[in-house]
Amino acid sequence: GDPVIDAAIQSGQVGERIDGRLGVVGSADPAVVRKVQEINNKRAAKYAEIAAQTGTSVAQVARVTGEKLISDLKPGQYYMDASGSWKQK
Amino acid sequence: CTPTVRLEPSDKPIKIDLNVNITQEVRVILDKEVEDLIADNPDLF
Amino acid sequence: MAAVTSRPLTFEPGGLQPWRLSDRLRGVFTDARGTLNASARLDIDSGKITGTGEVAIDEFGFQTTRLGRVESVNGDVAFSDLLDLTTAPGQTITIGAMNPGLPLENGKIDFQLISGKTLSVESAAFPFAGGTLALAPFKWVLGGEDQHLEVTADKIELSRLVETLKLPDTKATGTVSGRFPIDVKGTQILIRDARLKADANGGRLAYQGEAGESAAGADPNARMAFEALKDFDFTVLEVGLDGNAMDRITISLLLEGVSRKGITYGKNGQVLMNQPFQFDISINSALSELFKSTQYYTSQKQLTDIVVKQVQEDRNGEPE
Image 1 (cartoon, each protein chain N blue to C red):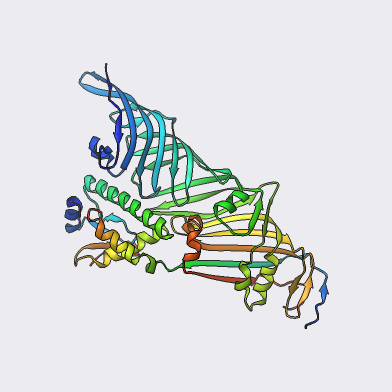
Image 2: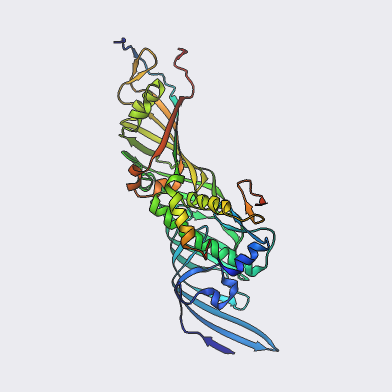
């Protein structure tokens, strides 16, 4: 993954969300926030590509991806589930 | 067959609610696609 | 006064990208493509640098999270305070295409950018299905999570809407208009119970399909409803939209009309002629279902369940 983001994940500043986006867990340094936004934009492009190929919606692709990413998280890493609150694996 | 009795139409419209729900089980379709997406883009996932 | 005219900046994925100019732009214009031609006038007096400038935008495109890929942005933007990334009010750009859940093309936006952070949109309008979708003025904090918008749909042509939504075996005429709120929350674009009313001359809709045949099944109500629906001329009273444009949405149609041919009705099969009907049809599905190419309709295993219920029975007091 991206070094800036990997470090932010290890330090609990950033986590995976069920809607397939990276999220800032509390507050984070502006450079990290911008990096998160950039990665979410790039992910959105990939979700749109797969949605078009499979006749599904961007939200459906993003959701299935989010679920898979969260299931693969290591213990201690943060994620946001459908309730919308941050939790730790 | 049952006798068909012609009825004078009532002026009040017959009201009908018609609800169509289209759901689509996407997990099956997307499972492999998403696995490849994550594997092929380490910089994003 | 030092005039600085930079050579055109041509962005392409893998090449020059906005974040190389300033990290402040990272995450705002991702995977940018196209050309910006900037000219600036910098002034240094009593140690303070101020600058104004113009940026000519030529076929500029970039990727976002909520609007999909924004394509073919064009326009000349005047910065009243270049270093603060603040423009004069009333700047205008045109947008070739973007997709906040439904594909929008050839839009025009009048705006002011304030301190590179807040986009004060004075007007925003896109042609859609023969009519226009326009946004009331609003302030958008770039990178903000939530935003409330007011949308005005003006003279949306039913014939074009039927075409856009690929409704099979359906012919329609007339236009609908209305105002409705949209709440943007994260990646959700929530349309809050939009009600588009048929304009003065009303709308017509005729459905010749067989969709009801299999769905009607044993239920007498369903059979009657679909018999009434078939080869039937309606006045369209209202088109409704409610739900998440990026995912599932409910489209509703309030129709009123008179059955031309005989409708068999009730347990003992009375035949009604010229009986007025009012239909409240609601279709709940992923919005993308309606915009995708028809080739997917057949190949997808879709669960379509149709619930028909007659709202109230007041046939001159006869119990159903």
